[in-house]
Image: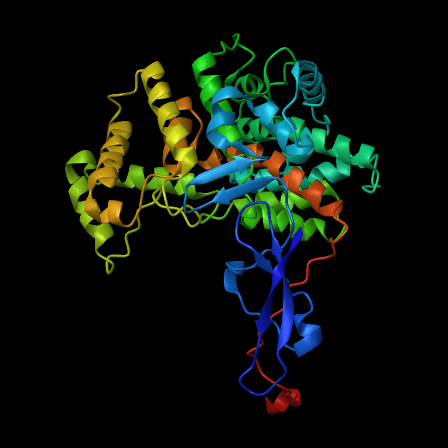
Length: 436
């Protein structure tokens, strides 16, 4: 942080003395006012529901410019990374701070591929779940359970122990996600294969079976790999903030990441692409393309309660930069699989065209976001709708673990403890039971 020469002055209309607060400048983005001593100096807290105007940490990892529609990993534009790098290169970048050279890339890929298997007893733990349990419920349990299977090093002040925990999480998450899927459909688990790429290996574990050899389609692998890159990190979102808050207590990284998985499950966060596809399926069931005008009319009617999922974004006030890339990938996958005439995909493309041309949506900048396109791509790849958020969690694990590492090595880090504006009862006396 670089201190600004300008100070912020907080004055009070009740005659309380004014106080000065430091202002800090980041390399890019808004300046921040340091209010850490506000309570000590004034006896007052700030009030910021949703933390919309609060910077909770210093970070060098990811930056979003919502007005310009930009997403940057360690200084690299997301478009550049998604076009020129694969997912494990992006993982290396988020963890280490720089893109790998050729040797570092091979070494990192080898390290990850040799940690993809999970403890065999995790299969017995998995069998304790109902077959019809939501995969995100299962995945939350599996990730948390890793702390029970991989507790050989618990001193997370040791960088070597942190490194191996990070690799384990990144390497084993595809295996756990695939296991959760196979269990839900009653198919045998498929073990990882070290000679495949990270994403090809995941697709084989998801869709392969012992009866025949799984054929890797490079177009589809690249499409899913791009989904992973675009979802790898996204600044201080709800699940990342959850990981940081959980990790700030000193808990192990498996527990902190499990907390992130649980938070991601929410429909306002990682469940958005699942909700988007459910919306498309409902439109299709109620008449499809022929009735899309009626659906759009309901969306425009604030009294109808009908929401347009997969359009607009809380942070991006312009076009979601990830959506541009995902749109290209979407069309590549549909062409590769010959799904251009599929009714649901035709419906999605019709909805996209309306949103990009209709003045109501254009004036409100309700452009298709990454969830709209990634849901379509995942469905085309054969990933069930209830697995979408698991795939998101797989991709976001590297961002979570990079943020966790940054937090616990920050000399300013301390256990998170938000404050509150209390509006409840004041002191009351307990009445005897027969008088209540």
